[in-house]
Image (cartoon, rainbow, N blue to C red; front, side, top):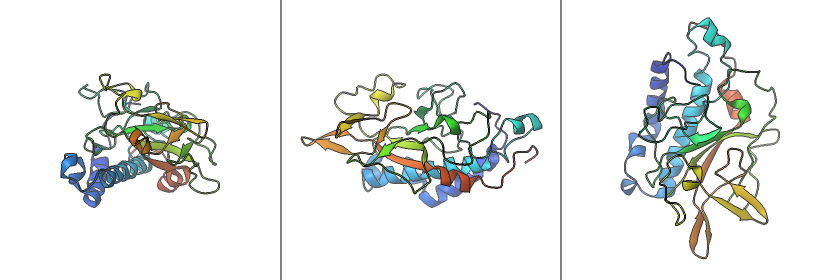
Length: 245
């Protein structure tokens, strides 16, 4: 949902604090970094921290009483569906599906890229979208399935669930031409493990952590960070949505 830029100063300040901990070097060319895995882990952690901060600051950023009524503490921004180079690139869009690129402008971040130079992708459970409709659940009732590179399910803790994932797509595989910048299949992969089909190109997954190799060649190189329901609840606790903050 495209909102006004009110509260942008607060988000920008928060972004500076996040960047101070991880360093502006995260958006530098990959060749200057120690290693692809370390680089990707760092940018994914930065994106996750910014998403949690945005969720926590979502209520205080409401500028009017009408806007406050449409804001829910704990919701997350909608993925960006614009292509790189478009005017709206980096900004969330209410009409976007729940899979797209990380809305870095909405989060007050620079355009984060992974070690291959690609922009980060992002998916979230529909229940937690920045839609302002319906109360957020008091318990985790919608989860994104995620597994490790061996196909073993990843669960944060008993009673918890995964509500969003951020993905570093990595370098293109031989079947990915990347001539369609809005096609998830040109950046993310799918693979089958023990008869289970994992598909990082679908908004609901099931998602599979990479990298995975077969015959000495990469078949899935998406690196993934996730956000749990408990993390959202902690970051957004005790923040009533009201205007004037």
